[in-house]
Image (cartoon, rainbow, N blue to C red):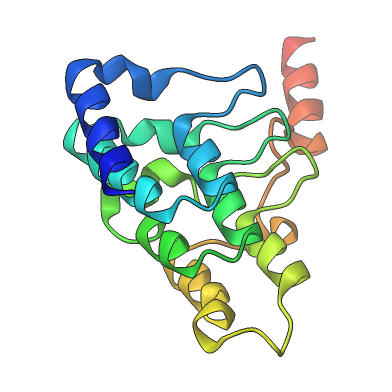
Length: 160
């Protein structure tokens, strides 16, 4: 494993833009590392993104609309959720209340997957998300890309 992390460091050091590459499923290297349980690789990629000021990559959504925070939550990766919910730049870039194609935030996913038999740290994912500012989709003001009907009617009246 140490050799693969060293190779990763060498690749990114010599080609920063490799962090921006997407698969046909619109997945970043971070999405892939998470999906395949490569936690040390995830940590290394997060450190590189912070070092290179590429935190905006954390908000990239795959074809299902899942950000890395959605994936970390659904895969019950407590350490990664904690990393994504700490630090102002990282928290802002991770877009804590982003919704996937099903309309779910990471907090919604945590609620749907939580069960009493989980280890205590995994059960604390909801506390981490909540304390960082993540909310249920139904608790957010407006659905994504939709304006309230009242605002639309006002605009139409003004235009006429």
